[in-house]
Length: 251
Ligand code: DX5
Ligand code: ZN
Image (cartoon, rainbow, N blue to C red; front, side, top):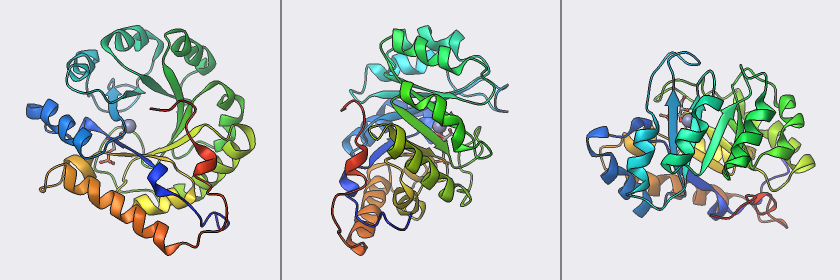
């Protein structure tokens, strides 16, 4: 988006995805992410049906709840998200991201999340048009743009999603400016500045944070450094686009 060259990257939130963490020391890795400046923890839940992979259930959330004060964000890649909401909410989840794809009643799902007192977001896959968000964005706190096809970590970032992030940002500015725009998949120090420039305000990163031989804090710092460098390269010109897009609820 050519007009958005002024931004304050301090407002960009980082959401480490534990899918890439070492599960033998998960609590320690999450603690390191918290110390390294994580804003929330992203938990990928897969049922082997909605996506061709299995991951984790509510027991993991229950354990994590005891070791971190960070918000726990649950990305449900499951065929029937409604079935799992109560269990994950009771385990200590703070927010749910549910897919638009495959859910004939996504508005009902979002209502259920709100009834449970949790934040909600709708996720769209790379092949899904941002236009579908128009009818649901008023009812959610955030949208999630998948920048890889869901199901696995360590996949390369799909650059074709960049213009789509811009379109999502335009839609959000038009309909609900305080809604967060989150991206998920292939985010690292190279791609982070690209997605933020396109309009993202929350970045999920798995392998870039938990797959680094220097530990967890070092790659998080590299991500922040890359974002700060991008900010320095751009010319301040009035009110920041990111400042216009603060989250609905502060964390
Ligand atoms: C993919 C998941 C992502 C995944 C990202 O389906 O939704 O959250 O953990 O992993 P990386 O950052 O390695 O692409
Ligand atoms: Zn995810």
